[in-house]
Length: 118
Picture 1 (cartoon, rainbow, N blue to C red):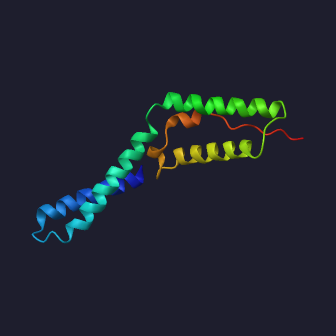
Picture 2 (picture 1 turned 180 degrees about the horizontal axis):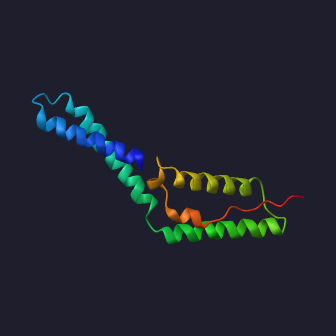
Picture 3 (picture 1 turned 90 degrees about the vertical axis):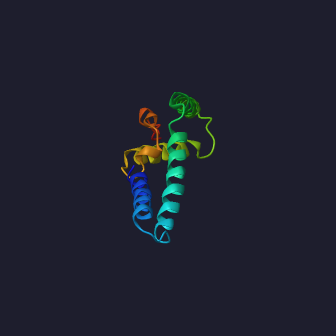
């Protein structure tokens, strides 16, 4: 969220500089960074919030599959640890004010898989 707001502030600064100064050489870098950054951030935000129900369902199916494999002793490799670490990372980034707009809220509804102690 904060990164996006900073980029928008850079864009607004570039627009103000271009409107008030007769020399556009100072405003051009602000405008370029602001426009490119705004487009980039906008696309990432848009893509992260498209169809959250399907993404939630996909995560839940993957979680249930890994739980089933773990309960029956047939899971392979580090898929369980990878799922948990990716999920926890995404949940932490969703709570981070710098990046929260880049992650959907649906990620908070999925629980990490509790690994059994043997």
